[in-house]
Image 1 (cartoon, rainbow, N blue to C red):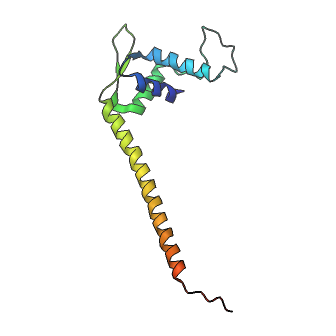
Image 2: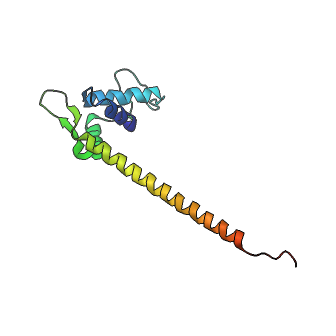
Image 3: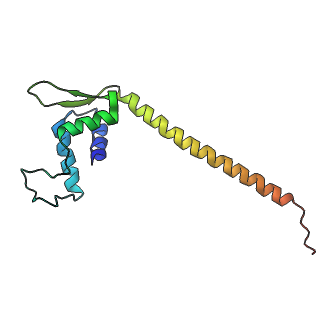
Amino acid sequence: MFDMMCDKLEAECDNKLYTLEDLRQIMLIFGRDIGWQCSSVEETESSDPPWLYTTRTIQCLLLDKYGDHVYVATVKGRSNVVCFRNFCDHIVSDKWKESLVADSASAAEKVVKQAARLIAAELREIDTNTNV
């Protein structure tokens, strides 16, 4: 659910600001949507399920995932607001790494296909004696 919440955050970071509590509530909604229930304790509106992260944990996970690209604005007495800085750099870097992996896989596939063509051509040229 953390990854789902991050996807939503990334998709909407240009248009909307979220507090850590907003992100926590998004995770709660996603968890309930996919049917995660509290198995050991009766879940009510006032109690949170045990799988739901605290806002502090969410902040730490965001910092681990995005590093310097995420900024959590903290002002005493106000909610902590999450925003991105230089997020385009992060997206471009991730896309470049993905394309690099895809290119290396497709390059390896091209090498194997070329080798298969060469082997097939060599096999066609071999003289075979069918008289035994």
